[in-house]
Amino acid sequence: MEVILLKEVKRLGKRGEVKKVADGYARNYLIPRGLAVPATPAARSRIAEEVAVAKHQEMDEKAKAEALAAKLDKTQLVFKAKVGESGRLYGSITNAHIAEKLSEIVGAEVDKRKVMLEDPIKETGKTKVDVKLHPEVKVTVTVIVEPESA
Image (cartoon, rainbow, N blue to C red; front, side, top):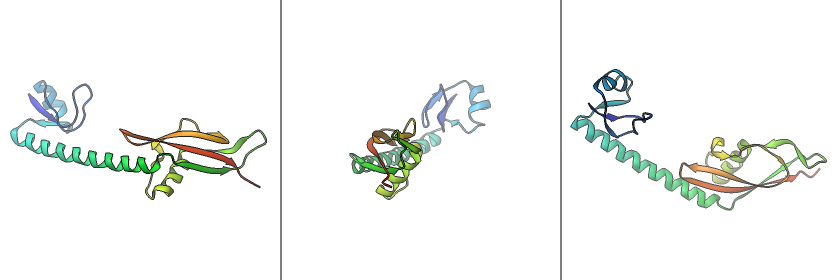
């Protein structure tokens, strides 16, 4: 039986693809769970339109992310923090702090999960941090941590 996938199914395919599967697999698993529909001509044309709209939206999102990346490229974020005698910070600079500062610069919300910081910054100095704005668009910003003057 041929089915059109409504969602990505592991080891089978992505949304909008037409796949030939066993009748029982389609009737007992894919269709009842809303993962696929039978591949009728009407369903094919409807899914083709939906995929085209989704592709167009994806291209718009990527263009917005690229424009934002151009704006953020070479951006330096300066943080002032209390520092101990050894040069280590009291506390740390996390991806949430960086996302908040980027949101102020951009004027739009930047999700903290998009800031690719493995460990919080705990020392003064410069650190390069990647920000993933889109699955295909990444920008690097410089985070500068300076000691807070007393």
